[in-house]
Amino acid sequence: MQITRRLEFDAGHRIPNHNSQCKHLHGHRYALEITLSGAIITLEGVSEQGMVMDFSDVKRIAKEQVVDAWDHAFLVYRGDTAVLEFLNSLAGHKTIVLDVVPTAENLALVAFKLLDHAYRDTYNNHLTLERVRLYETPNNWADCLRKE
Image 1 (cartoon, rainbow, N blue to C red):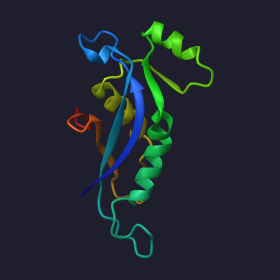
Image 2: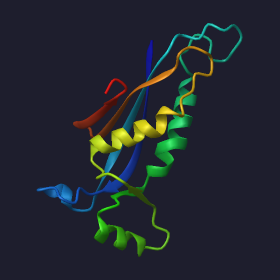
Image 3: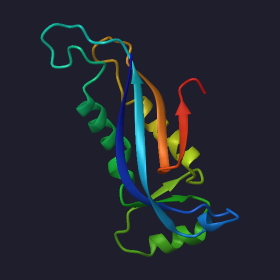
Image 4: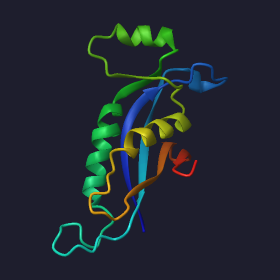
């Protein structure tokens, strides 16, 4: 059985070597979808009986690991030194420095890596993170799949 939870957040970024508009500082209303697989919990008397995982727990973990850190932050590539220097000059600015260019593809991969260890098999139901889908816009997204 698979379940998916969607969360949204706002963040800025730029693609420094892009040949078009994305080379400029800009922001998006991102959406993050987390898909987990596992057996339906059959343990009598537990709150999660009949579920793969409580959706509120899926949300809590995603917020702790990714969403709260990235929401209203600027996601910047470590090698984008001019922008990084500018952001560091802004007192108290929320900046997330990444080792990769913050494309939708790379952000989906980073989010997958951050979340993979966080979803544990609490009820021995073979809970596994299967996919992280990151929407950069309503029409553009990237999928990071476990099998990749």
